[in-house]
Image (cartoon, rainbow, N blue to C red; front, side, top):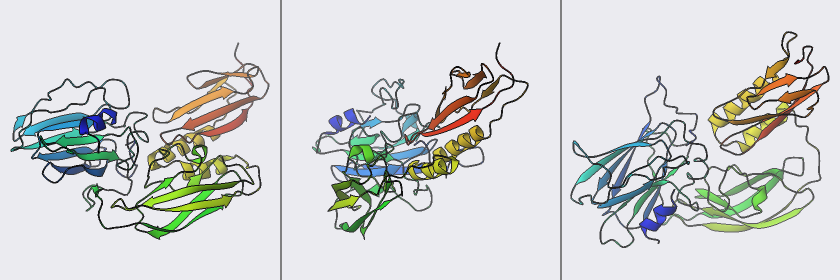
Length: 380
């Protein structure tokens, strides 16, 4: 195992909609116990989401290292005494803090309480890049503790997004220490969606906690970290070539880190052009957008765009915009209308104005709607 300092050098939730921290809810709080006498090289997956409070009890440790999303606030205490970091923390401008606070002179005989408050929303680029958990590749985000003289020290909790985890309802963090539970993989089946260009993998077996897809990277949803284990992928594949045979190895893993593998072979069906209407894009969002809050926001933007109407009293319309989802609007008929960067579409004459409107989010699964508009009032 790599030394902790190297691990967190490369360590660097959009939140699941089931628990937002709003005035009508108590702020979700999760607790973590990090004991440097528990063993060396221990790794855990700790679910988080935007606005959550994470309380970490630290025992028998001398120092810490971490990588947190930009906007995180913290307080380290020894009893009633606040302990300042030994470095100079800096929030920076990226998805994770430029310099995360660390404490390098802790007493192994003391018990420390570190309280983190995660930002709401989580910064763009954090979810899907830094929240893939223990079985993912670098970069990763989380918190490490160390003890002097323990060569393979750290005890590490990696931050991950797990919509099934609800604080205070009996779910603890998922230990990732090899034990006796082995995964088995009985079958992997592909079902074409009828277009020849997309479909689903389904798998059966026992003790399957996560899966690893090793087929072509272009066919794997960009919301997930290609080449890493994931517990939340629904098996959806895209950008497939019709009438083509695919063969690759497919892995499953148990909670105790005992994997199994099967070689998968399937052939896609013939090409059938899909009608990309509102119903198509709704199914697309339900399939490829992995966060419920993100899907709901995208559907809301789609609905608003589809409801847009021109007015005899105005020479413009404004497409729906969002601070949460990424959006863009372009004019496909630049002689008839122009699109501004603020979402305003201005009519130039009475010809048909065709607008292409795209929305996407943390899952990197863009939706593009195209509509025609007729104006009776034009810009001077």
